[in-house]
Amino acid sequence: MMMSAGKYLALSVLCWGYFSQPASAADCRWFGRNAQTAIKAHVATLQRIEFEASDRLKGLDTRPFAMLRDDAKKTAAIIVDPVAIEDEKGLARCRNRTWPVRKICADAADAFVGILDRHVATEKADYDKASYATAMEACEKHMGFKPLKSLIRGNL
Image (tube, rainbow, N blue to C red):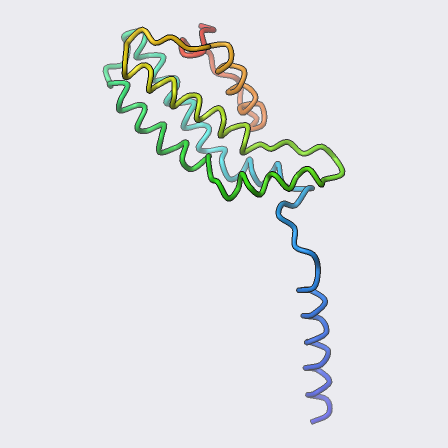
């Protein structure tokens, strides 16, 4: 009986020690890798949609911009996860510089959806291509992707 009580006491002390550790909103060491794993496929999907939108501008794709925009909105909603972006704000406490990868890609995804909205409104949309290209290239860099060449970015 005394052995059993000792085991429970030891287990209680171990649990107390484990649960009393300070909570961490974001693990500084692995945050970039974890964010990349979470959104890499979705960024690749945005690249594919951008490629298709570029083809649409060239006359090679017949899908309307509204359809491409709706697909981009669905994908952007996954990247622009408010909880994960809020978690990234805790990275300021990290000893080494840690990039807010999800925020960088969320800004690029929002910009892309905005561009597609403009193309839905008018075929000859006016927007800052260089600004969008810079934002999306920063996201692609963090994902390990080669920057896309497209008419949407104005570098084709």
